[in-house]
Length: 323
Ligand code: TXA
Ligand code: MG
Image 1 (cartoon, rainbow, N blue to C red):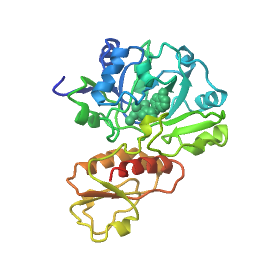
Image 2: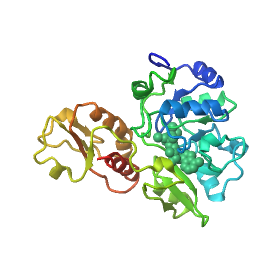
Image 3: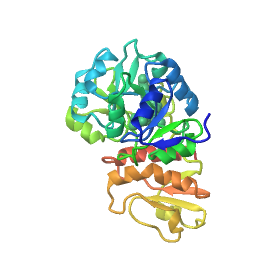
């Protein structure tokens, strides 16, 4: 174990550690990932160990290029191929029937593997230097808020990873949207994320969207309590929630405007102009910040359920479900 991780920009260091079977934190456009050689069971086991992640929660593999997916999966259903053509590299992950080359530990024993082509230029360059895909979950302890800066990773996993490849703050800020095919042969969204339902439907027509559930064996990462701060987070109408609140001990997450009575430094305004892309980018950093402000409670409001508001609300609901 290390005293604290290096945060740096050196792709050669990152690549050589990965080739040796070590885990390295990497930037993606969604959130930072904790990466290791997806074809090496021992390297993959390191990820589960560092994250304290239960082995029933499978990992996403990251490839440079969708064209190489056939080395790792049996087939790509036509609608998913269409989505890949349109939206990769980008914040979308595909569930596909795996080939034997993918270790069972990556998929938690499932015959399907999750595949993503990340868009971050630094990680793309890293992938281009490797002859194996990278298995990478979000680089946070299991159940906590995903990291959107290199410093977030260092704050929580710094003693357990040696190198964090710094790619600046994540552009998208929420995890990728996970898509697969359901039993009827229709496209299904298993996790709402950085690519909107509207964008996906614009490409392949109407899709099914799976709602959050506590017992969903096909998507263990959809556990209802996830992405959660330690301070209780409560959702509702902010103007009502803050009545009688202790102004020094209450945190607030709002979309556009500061509220009266609550200490300003305990208020996270996601996007003063009401832009959902900005709001998604700021959400996890805002939750983390408030979690360190010595508060009794965090109040937050849901956004309209359109565009990235859908993914933001999903994360807020899961963050609130512990409370
Ligand atoms: O944006 C992202 O997807 C980020 C970046 C780092 O790429 N990664 C990420 O990974 O969010 P993670 O491990 O935090 O979430 C992966 C989730 C799992 O919890 C599970 O719900 C789903 O992806 N998943 C992965 N493999 C699966 C499989 N074989 N079958 C069903 N669900 C799977
Ligand atoms: Mg995660």
